[in-house]
Length: 116
Image 1 (cartoon, one colour):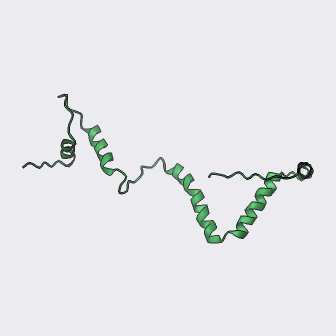
Image 2 (image 1 turned 90 degrees about the vertical axis):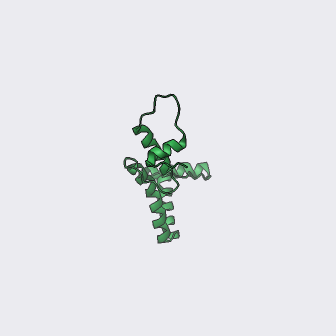
Image 3 (image 1 turned 180 degrees about the horizontal axis):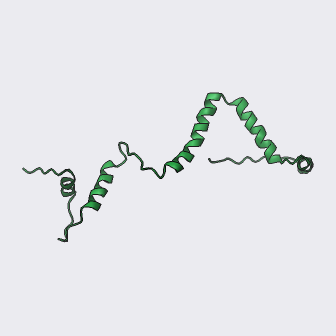
């Protein structure tokens, strides 16, 4: 999940005093601000939108886990290219020194020929 950094200005003397007293409570300014942002987010953003956002945050993690599984190709994702690669790997190239035309490759793939 990508995170966005927030920068704010605050008087240095006040920050030093705040950090001093937060240390006594085993807390940090960052931790307190993060908790407050989370509460404000839950209070301000409707539940349905939060669910949608959470689902978007989980997708990158699922994509990393799903990388080990073969991906299903959909229209426009080059099914033919993938099929050609498999056929080319399975069929050794001829030693005649001539490269096959695309039509010849298509004929090999489909097993059909058309002559006039």
